[in-house]
Image (tube, rainbow, N blue to C red; front, top):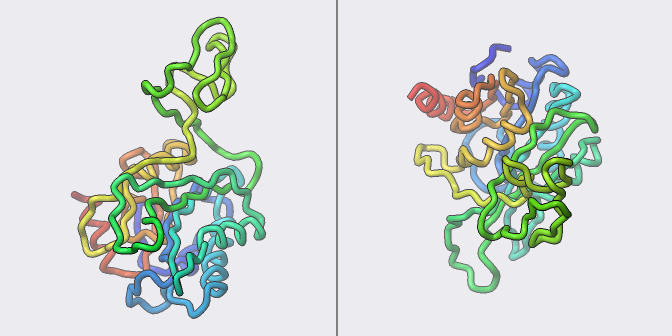
Length: 268
């Protein structure tokens, strides 16, 4: 299948065209359950039941697992939904089913939406986060460690000749001998809560995740020159970031109007 193209097809049909063990990483955000009707035949997200949605989605990810290299990684952004006043706990349902199907869950990352929109509810708290799950096929996989800079909040990080505890109670060894989750000249090992504002894209697609959200997964999970797959490409954010970071991309998108939006963004 041609690289650096967004193919107008549903996810399962597109995946069937890819050879096994051929993709470095997949990062995607699927249609959420009963969230939006994209008015496209064969779309996911409008199933009659929760179980049907989870099963259909995980069937797609079974094929993602097949096409990933053994050292590949899979990053899944998925949000939740209320129904009959109850939070459905959909991200956890999907992640547990993926583990049951053999995926290894390395992190459950919280995307804190720093500019979360207010909601009119008065009988619960406003939701200001979504989940980003980091899965692998095997215990050995490509991962480039990512760092976050030190701030004034971490004044107790030590560079002297003995171990020093930080504010979280972790201990840092002096740089000469290496460290376990300790300081380096690059910063500290990135945490699993990412505070990132929602995207500013205002095209016809109303569910675009921000570029910053997938920069870190692509840098961590796909070597330069490797190939990033997004099976629900939407408005093309994954392709845009992969291209900017020197990676190839393959995308599947069932709606041709969204592909036109993606092409404008990629060629702009």
